[in-house]
Amino acid sequence: MTDPIHPRAKRSPRLVAIGGGKGGVGKTFLSSNLATTLAAAGYRVVVVDTDIEGANLHTWLGVRSPSVSLADFVAGREDDPAKLAVETPVSGLRLIAATHGNLAGAQPDDARRLELLKALRRLPCDFVLVDCGAGAHPATIDYFLVGDDGLLVLHPEPTSVENTYAFVRAAFYRRMQAAMQKHDVRQRILEAMDQRNQRGIRTPLDLLREVQAMDPEEGTRFVATMRAFRPRIVVNEVASAEDIKLGFSVRSVCRKFFGIEAEYVGYINRDQAVRDAVLLRRPLLDVRPHSDAAVYLRRIAGKLTEKVGRPGGRG
Amino acid sequence: MSEAVEAAMKPLSEMSHYEVLEIAPEAAAEEVERAYQLALATYGEDSLATYSVYDDGEVELVRERIELAYQVLADADRRGAYDREVGSLAPVTAAVEIALQLAGEEEEETRLAPDAVVPEIEAFEDVEEEAGRFDGGRLRRARLRRGIGIERIAKVTKVNSRYLRCIEEERFDELPAAVYVRGFVTAYARCIGLDPTRVTSGYMERVAAARPEARPGRLRQRRRR
Image (cartoon, rainbow over all chains, first blue to last red; front, side):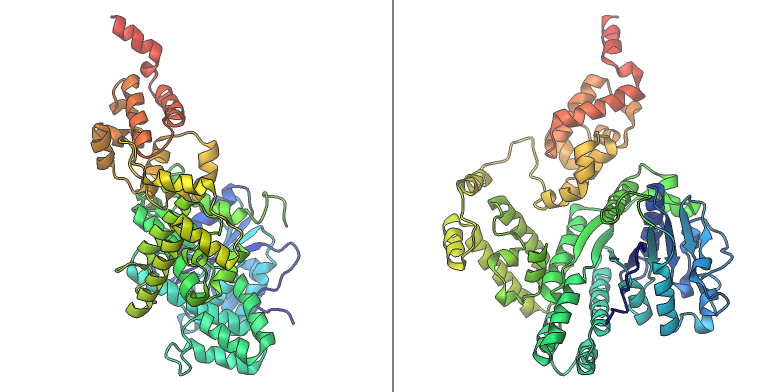
């Protein structure tokens, strides 16, 4: 049986999801600027705003009013997600915006969302970057899980770190629910999602033991899925060496407490250049290409391209 | 990486000392020390990284486990005995013993002890470290990840902090003659643990390009006058 979350097609783009729970930590900043960084390196990129209630990715990219958006797909006005992508001022970069949403029914239902996610894999490009928006709602988590790379953006502050762990936990359980095949095992995962569950399951490791005891075959599947679940940490707005170290600490806690192997892929400093770029509604790379933040962004982009190869070699 | 993934799926009670400190069995003494310092910061009181997941009792258990791992792995004899006991193929070599001795030696006076985690953070710098030439931004970034403030560098090097900022921000017009700038940059580099020769060669080219009057030839002419 194929896994519904990662159906692999030949020559499909690499999907990078950018999430992390808390609002205001820089998910949209990272999405838009990683997208421009990758496009500047010669990759064909589509960046997707999924935040229909609070869309503003288009503004970060200097697209004033996109003619079509994800909302048209949700409302059934456009059925082909490929036709939602509009050009941006950046060569090689297209945008699927989330403007003009119907606030009465902003998010697509599960079936429609799955359709969208499958369509993103068929887009003719090298990278699809998905800005997941804030919170740990199942829709947000699904956008995160669809990624080959799931970037977790956090700020060096307690509330952000707390929300990051909550997001990791929610994403992990939802991923496991999709991967398990037996009804009773799925039910057990559902129980475990309640943090005050009667069985005392607190962490993915506890859950693994339960699943192994219930059904060894599902246990094996659980371990395989757990191995593949590798969130990638980005610490945004660092101002000190302590802040930089936080990424390693969060990685350690993911490993020791949750049993999840995360990877620390980089950090970005608190930089006036970023604010300047936002005020001008232009990508940082355009406005301040030699700023420290731009250097750090290029490093993170470098990590993402390691697995893709040179531009033009795909698609 | 698969070793790390396997380790991640074990509860703390089943982890080896190496897994607790998140290092490989062949890790050198300084890696043990570095990993221990990071673990202390991560699982210490008031740690930003742990407070929302562990309760006090749990984090105390993690700390005890880290202490135990460190006590064994930082002691060459105990580490050797432990390796033999668990059948690890990582004998404590002469190199490890030498590294242990070196770790006890005092730092050079003009050099600040870089942050314990710096070498791991350096992994983010691969491309830049190997290929690029040093400019002001790169010096600033190296300083940030070492956790060293401008004022500390000023104190150690006796170079005015205003000049140090000008060096980082490449405000070449506000800096004195090239010969002094070279001295400042050398002191700055040494202070944060960079190779001064590598740093100055790239940096001084930038100074010369931006400020033709700062070329050595022009300086000599001025002196003759």
